[in-house]
Amino acid sequence: MSKVLVSPSILSAEFAKMGEGVANVEKWGADLVHCDVMDGVFVPNITFGMPMVKSLRKYSTLPFDVHLMITEPEKYVGEFCDCGADIVTFHPDASKDVKKALDIIKSKGKKCGLVLNPDKPLSLVEDYLEDIDMLLIMSVYAGFGGQSFIPEVLDKVREAKKMIEKTGRDIDIEIDGGINTNNIKDVLEAGVNVVVAGSAVFKAENPADTIKALRG
Image (cartoon, rainbow, N blue to C red):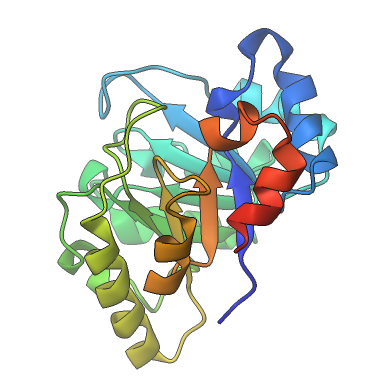
């Protein structure tokens, strides 16, 4: 199995000190910086956009793992790449042209991926397995931080792993939502190799130790 990467979500950082939060993610030994972008349309919450990603870029050398919870991502993915995103993932059910969005990201020399909410089937991404670098499976419903983990999604992770193995491609399986040191063993055993954690890291007494524990 690929090395497990930990991607702390800055949605759980102190917004007034966001640059410091991003710098801390690197200091604590994480592998990626997870940026949750919400538009208030596809999901009922609003977070931040391209200017925030661009301004935070100077605070860390880690890859920025940008999860777009926005309608028609094909209109914006190029700009997110230009602002410093290294991996851009979006929801296929929010897009009018999934292939176009993936192609734009790749044309910028960045990694691309698709995201599925807990109630969305793998059939939504099946046709794009030759194009993507990452599949993000949500273990809560996209739109809010601090939700409880939905264990049933691990069946989807196992199924996704089998689908990916059939392609022979090296596609990361990322999980996001309610992940902590209590459920990480089951998550990794299901086939995940990229772990998003927000509250579990930012509210930990020792975030560096928590990141190590999340690697299993």
